[in-house]
Length: 239
Ligand code: ZN
Ligand code: FE
Image 1: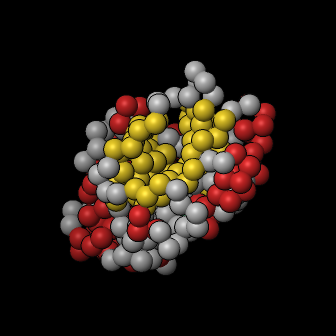
Image 2: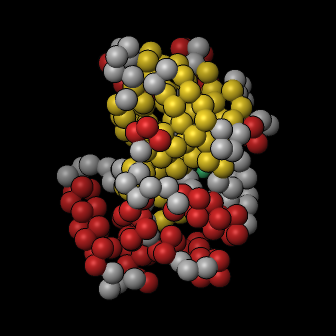
């Protein structure tokens, strides 16, 4: 399975997962159709599925055009039944879904939205975290509580450290400044920041990260308890 990073809108990442044997593909969080269409047409792949982590417009904006053009099926949380139009397959927490080489486990991670899910492609040791876990940050708490988000991050923390993390937005540089402010003597973080800057200076995205890097460097994952996490989340909202 090949993973292509497709930049969308201002700073969103959409991802195309491609079965290299037959060129079948899934797209994760198409914020807009255009850049996804461009890749599909240039590379002659068959879009079969659209996977949404949550209902926000910058993650589903391309759904309709892509569904209409390719008859792709939309997969999303059952909790987003009322919020994402035209869902074909409703997903439940903990469920393993499989079609051909595309096989993932659904991890329900409420907080940013109530129905937010992550797609854990365990065979590839890869997780798509939408707006729940970013590199060196986490999503704003909109619909859930701080406790929801804290517990959701605990679920992601328990994935194997080698797991690659593909997140929803290029916020990494700004996030690194916040982490650095509270954790400036963390050598792992300082190393990560050098790596991030090198990537960005070369015009490269900072995806993927890894669970190990995030455990070592992400101040929201390093928070010892709900109280500490909530304080950081509030400070970040006004950062
Ligand atoms: Zn969002
Ligand atoms: Fe978003």
